View: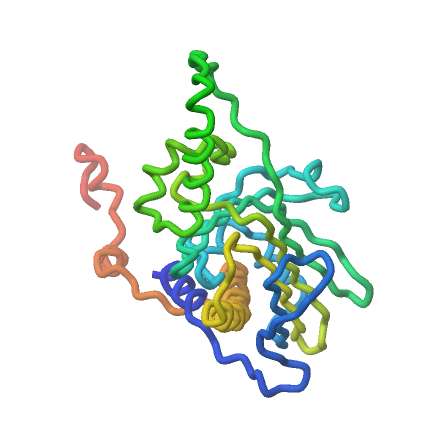
Amino acid sequence: MRAAALLAVATTTTAVDWAAPGASRATLATLDGYPPPTCTCAATLEGSVDDVVDALLDPGSHHTWVSRLDESVVLAKDGAELVADADDAQVVYYRFALPFPCWDRQVSAALFCDRTEGGGARVELRRVSLPPPSEKPRRRRRKPKKRGDRVVGWTTAAAERFVLWAPPVLRNKVSRVRPNVEKQHGVVRSDCVTLPAFRVTYALQPRGAGRTRVELTLGADPGIPCPPWLIRWGLGHADRTLEALEATVAARAAEKALRRGKGRPAAARDPSVVLLSKRRPARPWRANPFRKRP
């Protein structure tokens, strides 16, 4: 029951005061190093910088509060060699549930954190390419004839363009024709399209009295031209992500308080335990039937 209550708190969004000074809803921006379209939003959340960092550095639970994220799997605990400017990084697999015409999109990203001046922090997600899993060598196929080379090239190019727009139901069939399906550690699915570019940054700064200002910068290239209505849809979900992050930080703080024994709710006792506690203690003569009763 306690775990279910904490999960309900984490998945319920709270009302962030967007009218507060320094708060801003998601808007489009053009920044160096971030793929278009890129959006930025900022808000002041309840919780210390360490509490927010703990929630961000738990990628296995990101799908419970990141908007439109259906799956988050930790691929490797030590992925610092994949990022040049990070001493310690985790490799995470994400699968997003997006509407038409994007459908599902997937990406493998490195998650790392850097401490900044003034007691702040910077948590970043950056797309990385993992080495393919080791597979058994397949039997070498006979090379196609020269007359069929152009036909194969046209078919492959058409399949690549079709997969970017096709629904997930049809991608499994088309994936047999695609020669460059990206498979990383057996997690990447053939019915999802990998994001060509992906970078997310959370800039944290303390605001005193257990409050933290969070600036979210999100850049993701879906691989196809985005219509205006789809961009507006994404901006709204960026705001929801910050709202859900605040609820997650509050739920994790409540869980820590329960573990420490502070604010523990009075649990209802089992009736059988209550009846057993009211019984009279066993007498020694009952334990030994040969002993005389006093």
